[in-house]
Length: 154
Image (cartoon, rainbow, N blue to C red; front, side, top):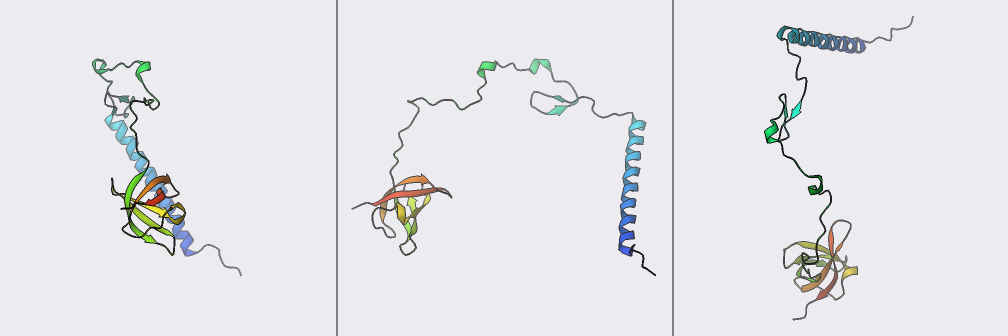
């Protein structure tokens, strides 16, 4: 004779699911009864006041601000030639770390003390740690990289 496919664990799961469903139905009925008793229907309309907050009362028309459609700028304003600052692309810095066998290192910028990665392919002169160098910045895969690194002769 074959065994029943219904295990104890399955019946417990079914009982739990039915119990949750019954509790949910009871909670819903209690909320409906409370709403009928108090006479509240909730917020029928939601308004946005002058600060952008949702309220159940209409906003005060005296605080309404009118904007001209032409005064709204959607894009970035164009920069004028007089607004542009001439930024020197060549920067100065100091080599904080350089591993010649692996072919990479780091340069600390003298102006903002930022560390920039440099690869042997972007180095023009032979450099070592604590050398003062000039370099240019280029966007790499993981951030800005120092390229065209030349040694400052003192």
